[in-house]
Length: 185
Image 1 (tube, rainbow, N blue to C red):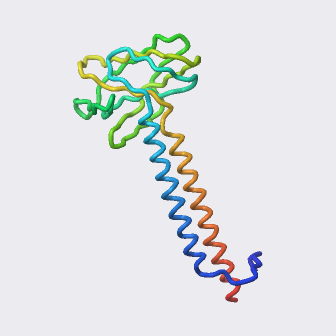
Image 2 (image 1 turned 45 degrees about the vertical axis):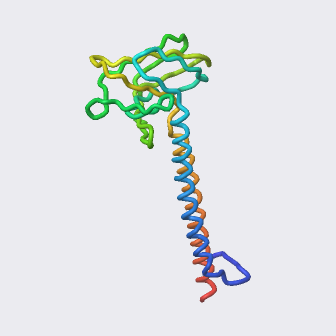
Image 3 (image 1 turned 90 degrees about the vertical axis):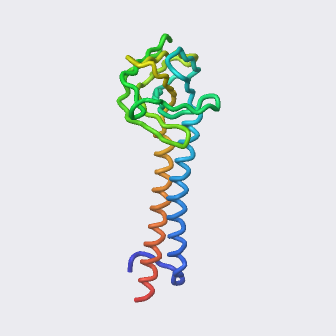
C-alpha cells in the first residue's frame, strides 16, 4: 500500500526506540555543542587591558571579544561599570599583515566564568605573533579582551547533529506508523 514490504508487523516498541533516538540526539547534540563552545571560550587567549598583548595566531579571521566577566591566571575578573559595558573601545595592531576592523558579527557568550561579545574582527594574513593594544576612551576602568574564532562552529555542528538525529527518529516513527497501519488493514 505505501511501498513498504515487511515480513512481520513492526512492534509498538519501535515507537519507544524512535522517541529515545529523538531525545538522545537532541540532548546529545545540544549538550555537546555547549560543552564544545565552553571549551572554545576557555581556550581563547585573553588579557587585561589597557596594555600591549601578544599572542601567536594562525592566519585567518578572528574576533576580539570584550569580556565583562572573565578569568585570567585563575583570578576572576569583572568589569565594574554600569551595565557591564565600557564605551568606545579602540583596538589597534602593530603587526604587519594583520588588520583590525569593527565587528559586523554579533557573537556573544555567557558561561559560568566568562561573558563576552564581539567588538572587532582581526584578519591575520601571516601566522605568527600578533600584538594588539586596546584602550577605552574616557575610562580608567580596566577590562578584558579575548581573541578567538568564535563559537558559531560548535553550535552549528551540534545543532546539525541534533537535527539529523531528530529527523532519523521521526523517520523511524513514521516508518513504524505506516508499516503497522498497512498490517492492520
